[in-house]
Length: 96
Image 1 (cartoon, rainbow, N blue to C red):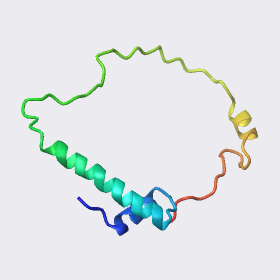
Image 2 (cartoon, rainbow, N blue to C red):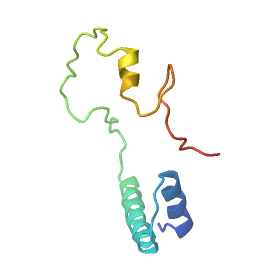
Image 3 (cartoon, one colour):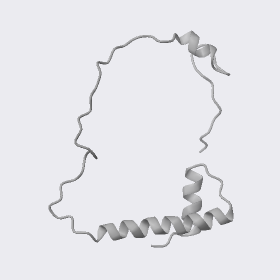
Image 4 (tube, helix red, strand yellow):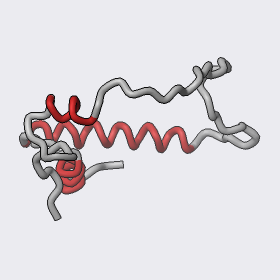
């Protein structure tokens, strides 16, 4: 499967990446190889194969969840470069 330049540019825009023309061409080749590999996987007969949920058979060991206050609200805001009385102030990164 081939990926066109517009698709690479759209993905780059969504990922907030600035690609040179050479990088766009390389990404087109790489993405096409990935999709070709996925198409090859679709050719494999998986009838009767259970879906894989976990990569290992080990059990997840969880600790007891204990609520405790490590840092106060005011102490956290002291470390912020910009803040108001209640919140951290950050630059807007998403535009419509």
